[in-house]
Every structure is written in C-alpha cells, then in structure tokens.
Image 1: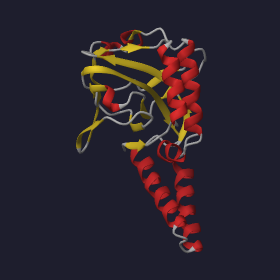
Image 2: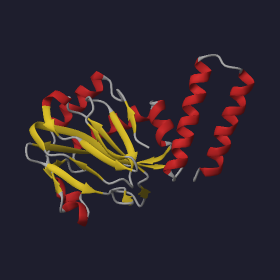
Image 3: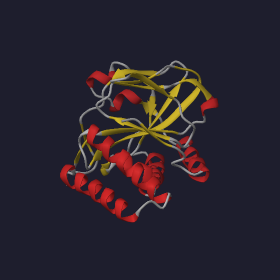
Image 4: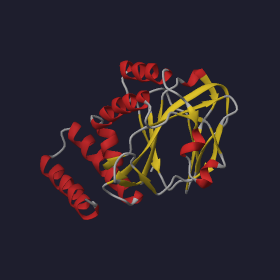
Amino acid sequence: MITRVASLLSAAELAEIRQRLEQGAWADGRLTAGYQSASVKSNLQLPQGDPAAREAGEIIMRALERNPLFASAALPRHVYPPLFSRYQAGMDFGAHIDNAVRAIPGTPHRLRTDVSATLFLSPAHEYDGGELTVADTYGDHSVKLDAGDLILYPASSVHRVAPVTRGARVAAFFWIQSLVRNDSARALLFELDAAIRALTAQAADRDSLVRLTGCYHNLLRRWAEL
C-alpha cells in the first residue's frame, strides 16, 4: 500500500526545519548504507548525532503524532528517528530494498521496518529529477511531492531515487514498525477506517457504524502485535 499524507508539516514547521538543516554538517550518505545499498547510493546525509538532525527530527515526530491519516495508514508501534538526505546534481540512489531490521542509535532497541517513509522538504520547482520510484505488483510508481508532503510505502518494496539534474532535493526518511506486520492486512484496515470516517461524516445509521467499528477493532485485535 502506497499512501500520500499531504501537508504533514505546517509552513512554519517546514521553514524551521529547512533553516536548521542549512546549519548541519552534511556527510557522504554511503557511511550509513548497508553493503548492497552502498554500491548504488550517491547522496549526502546528516549524521544522526548532528544537533540540526535531532532538532528537525523532533519537529517531524510531533507532526506525526497529531496526524490521523498517518496513524490510520501506518498503525505505528515504533518510529525510527528521522534521517535527512540531500541529493545534488548528479546524485541518485539505485534500486534497493531497505534493511529488515534497524538498530536505534544510543539504545538497546531494534525496529522491524514494515513501512518506509519519505518526507519531501524541498519545493518541487527547486530541482529537476529526484523522483522516488516504488515498484509493486502493478508496476513502478514515480513520486515527487510538494514540500511538507509524506509518502508511505512497504519497506519490502524495491525502490530508487532518480538522478537529480538541477538544484538540490532535501528530504527526511525513516521507518515504522507497525502494529500490523502484513501489508495487505494494514491496507484492509486502512480502507475500513476510511469508510467508517466517511460514513460518520455523512451521519449514517449509528447502529451500523457501531457494527462496522466493531469489525475494525476486532480485526485489529486479531492482527496487532504488541
């Protein structure tokens, strides 16, 4: 399931993040890549201990916590602290699959990567190229969103970032361990939740809504891993 979360960040939050990232010490992105990914990765990245990265990441985490669409689509149990990438002219990231498990720096905890997330931070008109392409059963999906928009997609997907030919593409990226491991089950719950919200807005029959809501929570109860 591929889901767009429009306007995750407010204009003020986006401006603050961009200002902080300008002060960061960008380094070779291959330093944080796995063996296979490093061979196809060409970008810059902020070290996780960089103060600018930590401060910008905290803003993003707060935005995620208040966004109902993100919660419905990802059903988050754990969210990996956001990382930040910068692609300048000539840089790209070839086809790869994200690591299945990520250690959270500074803690003894590990996170299973069920859902991958890319949060676009550069306005689309500031750069050419740089599209995120995600492959699934129905083919390749090319994504280039407005600044402040988030895309969610299965971490098991083969994906890539096209070469940037002008300007710079800055984005945050991170992973989510979902309460529901299976992507098809998450998609079913997401559609059911969306239908319940739509029917509620239309003041549909209350008894029917209670039954539908019960089905949602009973399915979540069956599939959730705590």
